[in-house]
Structure formats: C-alpha cells, structure tokens
Image (tube, rainbow over all chains, first blue to last red; front, side):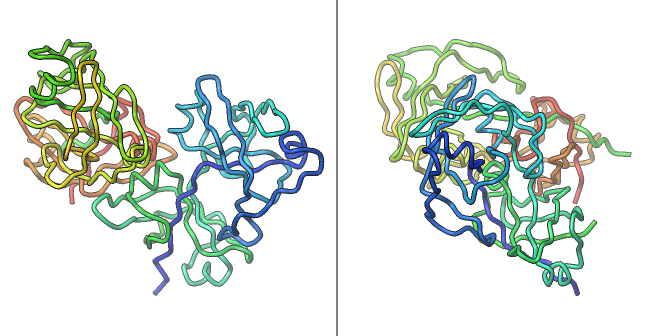
Length: 192
Length: 192
C-alpha cells in the first residue's frame, strides 16, 4: 500500500532577496547571516529583516531567507495583503510575473519593488524515494486531508519531487489556521 | 435531487455584549445604534466599537454586534489570538465555558472579561424550507466544498436550522482566506 502520511509546516511571511537588493538594503556586498537552517537543504532563515510598505499599511520586520535568489520574492498571506493594500496572486514560488510590488526598507536603503509579491500556492516537497513510496510524480496534483476538529481537505496540492527535498507539505498561515494545524502535524495524502 | 449550492460569508472579528457590559463600556442604559442589518434577521452591526487588550497585544476597534445577549462573547480568528496572546477554543456560538478572557476598553469604562473569547466553529444557517431542499436536519454535520484554485473541502460543518434563519455558511477570516472566497461566493454542500 502506498505511503499516506506526511508532516505539514506553516510558512510565515518571508522574503527572498536578490544580491542587488541585499546590496541596497543592507550595504554593498553584505552577506546574510544564518539564524537557523530550514527544512529544505541549503535554505536558511537569516537574522536580517526588512519592513514592507504598501499603499495601505506597513508590515515591519519581515524575515529574510537565504541564500540570495535571482529575483526578489515576498511571500505573504492574503490577510497580510489586506494590511499592505495589495492583492497577491496565488502562485508557485518563482512565478512572479504580473504580481504587485511594494517598498522595501532596510537599514541601509530602500527598494521600490515593481513586482514580486505572491501568496505561495500550497505544495509538497518530496525526495525521490518518498515519491516512490507515495506513488506520485513531480508536478502531480493531489489532495491533502488534515486531522482534528477543523479537519479539511486541500484540493489541487502541487507535488514537487527533487533529490534535494525533505518530505514536507507547506501551507501559509491562513491555511494553517483554517485547519488548526501546527508545524509537524501529520496529514494524509490522497491521490485523485 | 437535493439542492447543493449555498452562499458563503466571512465573519470578521466581532463582539456580542451583555447589557451589563454595555452599561460599563458605553454608559448606563446606553443603547447600541444600528449601522446596518446583518443577514440573520434581527441581528445588526452597530456603530460602536471596543478595544481588546490581551496579555501580548491589543486589537483596536472591534465591532459590536447587536442586540445585547445574556453573555458577552468575543469571536476572533486564530490569527487574532496570536496578536492578543490568547488561545481561543473553536466553539459553537454561545458555548464560552472555559474560554479565555481579556480586557475590553470602551469610551466610558473597562471590563475585565474572565471568559468569552472563542473562534466560532464554521456553520450553516438554514430555514425550514431550505433544510427540506438540502435534505438535512438541525445539528447535522456536512461537508462544504469551495470553488476555485484554492478549492478545499471543510469537514464537520454544523447545520443550524431555524425558521428565522437565512441560508448562509459562516466561516472566519482565516478559513475564508485559506479558500480564497469572498462574501456571496457559492459553495457546495456534500452530505456524509
């Protein structure tokens, strides 16, 4: 029988920065400093934070994740979007074309981001062995059922398979609260 | 075939006050003033607001709903609970025993609420004719499927049938955002 259970994790708002934007926000050739490793290999939460200023409001102290990426990407919840006054599209990470922007404020300078704000679509990270165990392939859509009194079934959950990935489902804070799940709670994968 | 589709509505944080607490917060024998009628007959959003002060943070301007009720009840999302520093149980409206409290601040005075903060369990209001059409009875649990790219299925949704009720599913803001639905969007009732 195929494996069914995997851990869930809630992604709080965070930002990935390009090297160019790190230079502006924190200073020329500044290197992000690691606060802690994240579950996906090589990724880390840095000690650095930026403020995000939208047309309607500001969110202070948004955590910067490292390492730097080719494009700056701010991942927020829809609730955060209401605070900022922007309407983030629900997109897979890396797909920022046409998304809204905002002003980023760091200790060394400011960046007027023209695009890059998304609400990350819920997804599952999975290594090659796990993909075999769960009988799924890269980019397959599955359902995920959460336990408990606020039990729900997330439809259209994207599976990403990569040898570097650790097994984990990622949802944002709105989705985690709606299901009343905590980091590490076990959820059930259901194939279509 | 049984009816399947009904409208959904997002309940933002709000508070129901006892007459005693209206007297303290707004002044002796103060009458709440109607801003607008709500979908359920006799219920209204008032012009009045109170601030809620929790152990960790404050939420300003929480809307008071009328008319007054026997017990004061503050309905917030789990995200609001993090702001205040309280952990609201997920309960049906009216079931506040053992729930946490907070300080309420009005223009005329303050109330130290010892209990009354809940995260309202998602539920459906339905009149007698609609209950026949949907083939459900009072207190039955059903599933609700939402449309769109963030489609999900809410399990364990409580149906409340009353001749005074207008047909509507109520979720909180976390749940509404997780499904990316707006007020009035049509959702599908699925029987167990």
